[in-house]
Image (cartoon, rainbow, N blue to C red; front, side, top):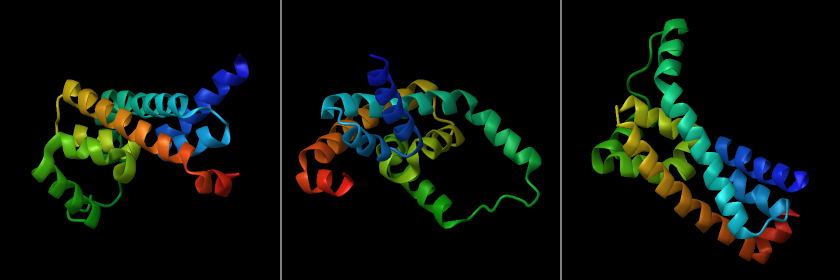
Amino acid sequence: MKSEIVKYLSVAFASALKFFGGPITGVVLELNWIETALASATGMMAMVFLLTYVGKWIQQFIERYRKAPNKRFTKSNRMAVRIWKKFGIIGIAFLTPPLFTPIFGPLLAVGFKVPKNAIFLWMTISAILWGFGISFIAHKMTYFQNWIR
């Protein structure tokens, strides 16, 4: 029983840091694809929950100790603003797993002053869709499984 919980926590932790790490970890630990998908979505949402409530504090902390002024027009800033202007929180949430990672997606949403309930709603939908999609692909492609093992 403890080993199963450790497996789920490993998938959730990997997914909290880099979303695609969760499904890969689930394949390596031989969980089925539904368990992997749920653990991956849970890991991402744990990070979203943490950073949504602590994100403003983190931004203030970084600003306080930053030596050089913040660059306003970087390539990634422009991309994030472009996505925000076109698609809003839905675009940020949908692109968080593959592009922004579960760490920077919520911080972007907090930076754009999105209400917390909208962040949780759209990030949850995104985490579930990406979790099930990527977990299914990772578990069903025999080439991918053989390459990992």
